[in-house]
Image (cartoon, rainbow over all chains, first blue to last red; front, side):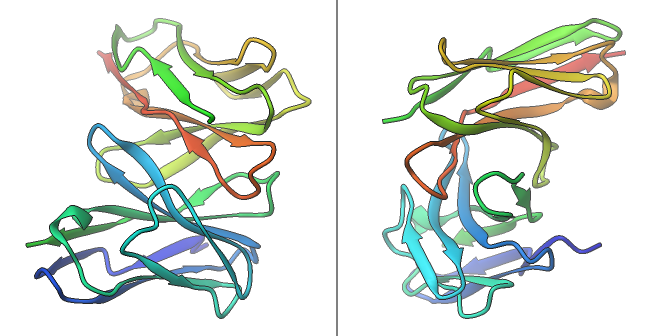
Amino acid sequence: NAGVTQTPKFRVLKTGQSMTLLCAQDMNHEYMYWYRQDPGMGLRLIHYSVGEGTTAKGEVPDGYNVSRLKKQNFLLGLESAAPSQTSVYFCASSHGTSGKLFFGSGTQLSVL
Amino acid sequence: KQEVTQIPAALSVPEGENLVLNCSFTDSAIYNLQWFRQDPGKGLTSLLLIQSSQREQTSGRLNASLDKSSGRSTLYIAASQPGDSATYLCAVRPGNQGGKLIFGQGTELSVKP
């Protein structure tokens, strides 16, 4: 009954620090996504993956890297965090292009 | 470039009213459209998914319609309840862009007892 699980739920970083956000899904979905949500900007796609070992850029990929080494996991990395990356990050997954999107509960990230 | 717009940005209604939320998109070449609900501080929950070949989908008190030619979708909520208070977002999957979904900014709904 887990669905999409994101870790951590909250994190505070200093400018220049690095971190990795982990997303795990147990629904055997091919597609996985990373979004960020900011007031007044809505949800914006950072990167997405259509299958194990593949990734693609979304609307706002700069400053982020991703990896999909296993089908069930999608990692989002920040190599050198900046205050502009303060946001709520959501992971989602779907069964191909025809299926519903299932979202994780989000990660609140603050970069000081 | 596909753009998704939701009007109004906020809506307040008394309990029991039937209401309609609107979503418009600029490019009719879509694969499907989804409506989501987001409660404060939470993730998004998918409410209804309409494939491009469908006209509407229903789930309980919710009914979503899709008119691709006019670039519009509506979410109808019957007999609204305070528990329906949340932000409602629509998202389209463009037909030629693989995995991407484009989201509207959402309508914040408040249902007063």
